Length: 59
Image 1: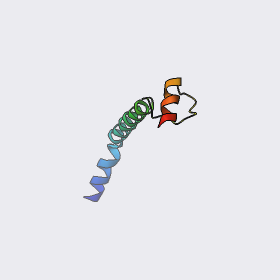
Image 2: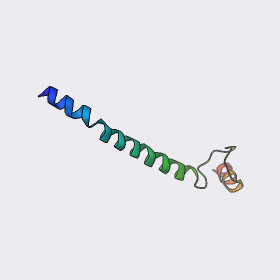
Image 3: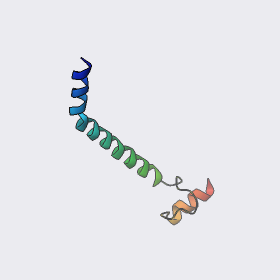
Image 4: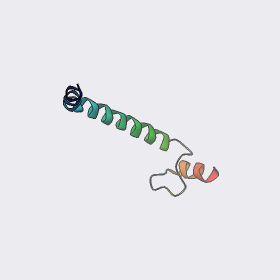
């Protein structure tokens, strides 16, 4: 039984990989969306707009 389970897992690794990559992409997109909202960038961040810089200094 363990051998059959191991073979099943081995031959389905591609589905697990796709799920892992899709999750990583979704988390990265959510993080970048959060990072680009006003007030979430630290002061002095390279990609900061003047409005974001001001919001970071006010916090």
